[in-house]
Amino acid sequence: MKKTRSGLAWSLLAATMLAAAPTAAAEPATTGFPIVTTTEDGQPIPRSAGLPYAPGNLADRIVLTPGADPARAMAVAYRTDTAQTVAEVQIAVSVDGPTLEEKAKLVTGKSMPVDSSYGPALYHQVRFEGLTPDTVYSYRVKGAAGWSEWFQFRTAADEAKPFRFLYLGDIQNGILTYASRVIRQAFHANGDIRLVVHAGDLVGQRDDLDHDDEWGEWNQAGGYNYSIVPQVPATGNHEYVDDILPDGTESRKLGPYWPAQFALPKNGVKPVEATTYYTDYQGVRFIVLDGTAAIDLGSMQAQTDWLDKTLAASKANWNVVLFHQPVFTCARPNDTAEIKAAWKPVFEKRKVDLVLQGHDHCYSRLTGEAGRDANAKARADGMIQGPVYLVSVTGSKMYKLNDRTPWQPDKVAEATELYQIIDVEPKKLKFRTFTASGKLYDGFDLTRTDKGNRLSEITEPTLATRRCSGEVGPDGGACVASGK
Ligand SMILES: [Fe+2]
Image (cartoon, rainbow, N blue to C red; front, side, top):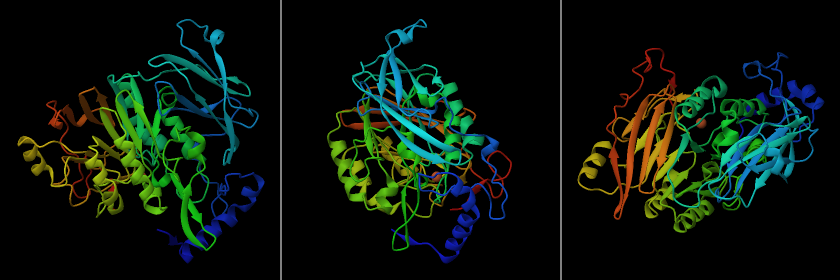
């Protein structure tokens, strides 16, 4: 679906680019995106909370990602200034004294330039292969001025074994201001999170300008947690930026930071190997799809076929699918028709357990299209639970709930920042949703039986549904949710 940029948008963009031309020309921009540091009338654009995110002679933005088999493979991506020209990482099986250097092995990788508002940088990626399952390793990464601290991670076990993962919706807005406390609360209140899954729109970039500050905030918000816990990100529409095709029509292309920041398994499907993949973690197959490329860039059929094949081949106890644009929306007037038509039948046929999504900046847990009461009755009558569809949001942008939310989802929230903790066991999956301040908001358990999943509501008390009442928000102040 290509749109032609309007004349007004064109002239605004041209004016912005002209105003920025002296600054952009002074700095190299190998990303191909203009770097705008001043407004049209020459005023400096304030950078996120005034924080400098310049690359330095020590590494930053250190993000661990799982391999396809995280029992044996992990990867790390990090950033330095251009003085560190090679990707160098040391890794060792962890010991308990300060002697990690003695047996550390040097692993090298590849480096790629990304120049931005904060100056030229190199992103480095190193893959760890041939690791021993269920083993604690330490690694450190090199900048021109020396090594980082040692970061520690545990490889996955080679079998289905209980573990905990964190699911985050759109971080995107108020990344440092507001989303950071949610991420930190999640880690602070819940020990031994082994994976983090992100349902897209990690940042708010969209136009064809530089967005380095947002990636700086994203990394600061998660901090060292991103270096010690493997991250499983899905792209949202905001991981894509505008692209003007030779014929003048507007399209989208993946922004420059995604392939630099995440050393993903690349075991997905052409032409979207950078954004589709799967990883098998202790009895769960996580499958990551790219809704934007499917809807707007022509890869729907390829992704649908790959999804079906990847689910059919799964030997996992649980199959979790992660992508951005939700099948069932909680904010928009209509569900995401293309995805609903293509992927929902596959989820049902292949008995997917959880569908984790974002995009709508509200919360929704939906256990069946017929609606909450009908689903509850059907469950009481012995219904096998199909895929459970979740939508959630972490950052500060909020949308108003749509007119289906009073009856269709089991639980919804408006104007509420949330995180989700999922405890996985071979036969049980415990899903819990918490508010930003750590209050239990929603939850259910899925139990695997020979006939299929049974869903049970939890007995612990949860907060009452949070939604705006007119102009008043659920905390008694202004309703900050806007209509979609
Ligand atoms: Fe979003």
